[in-house]
Length: 133
Image 1 (spheres, rainbow, N blue to C red):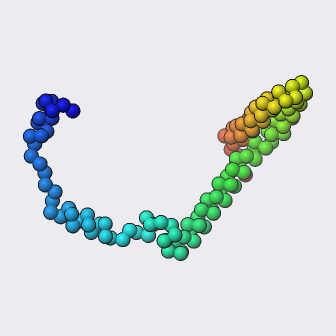
Image 2 (image 1 turned 135 degrees about the horizontal axis):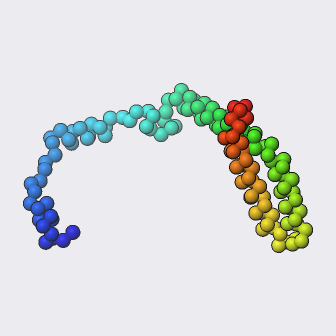
Image 3 (image 1 turned 120 degrees about the vertical axis):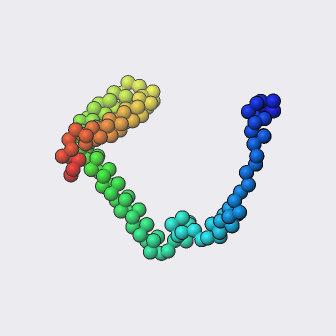
């Protein structure tokens, strides 16, 4: 910002504002007030709250695992065919190139893993009755 700018001159010419007299005592009172237990570090929570939180985390983890297995189960049916295709590609990668085929093997494995995950997700979308199991 330049000092000769008309906006700068107008802003400097404005009167200053004073803080209300209740501002400082209000801020000091808020700083001295103890924080609620849920905003403090976890180890300072009451034991019942820590136990409930631990149970909730374990339950959420169990539900996530169960949901992941439900999502993956339709894809497992597709994996049989994918396994045969990967086996054929693996044999192709091993036979002619030897050491040179290892990057191709890694690519085949990564592709098969991605296809399996994609197949599981698509099966869940297309066949909701499988996802309900």
